Image (cartoon, rainbow, N blue to C red):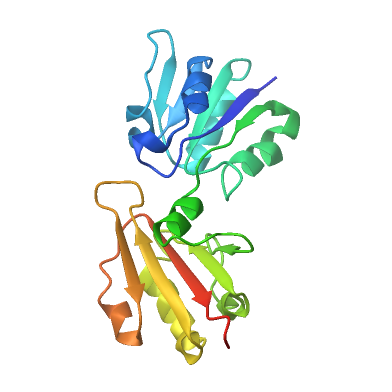
Length: 212
């Protein structure tokens, strides 16, 4: 029987990982995470550690350690496009012993612009096309979690073509949230899109002016 702990590691900065997450890590016999996540924890001498971020490789490692308590560190909060559902699909929901919540990059993004994030619609185009990206513009508050293929410049270019600038909106690109290289870019006109220096960790946020 699998015993998987899905542990939210926060958006990246060490200080954004909760004390509970660190405590749960110490209870695990096996730990799986990226290099940055593993640097943020104290590994015990008797723990087996795998530095890995590829989804299929993680699944295979979990399979290999069936019967052991395996802690998998996931980016942000485990409830937002994380591996929790993938584990449930492959090993069964009962294989997940516990899900440890944490701070998501969505929360941090809204905190940076001092806005509440109630009623935000969250999008991700991982393993999908952007053919229906116009639906992003149907909501007052939409946030898009970018990936390597769907980076901020690509997403904003598609939104521009779908009518992003036809209504008054506040548009932001958040990069490397909680890291020393963090930046918040306000996009005010189409030309601003071309000036974006794409980074590995990015979020795009649009907020429609209620007055319209």
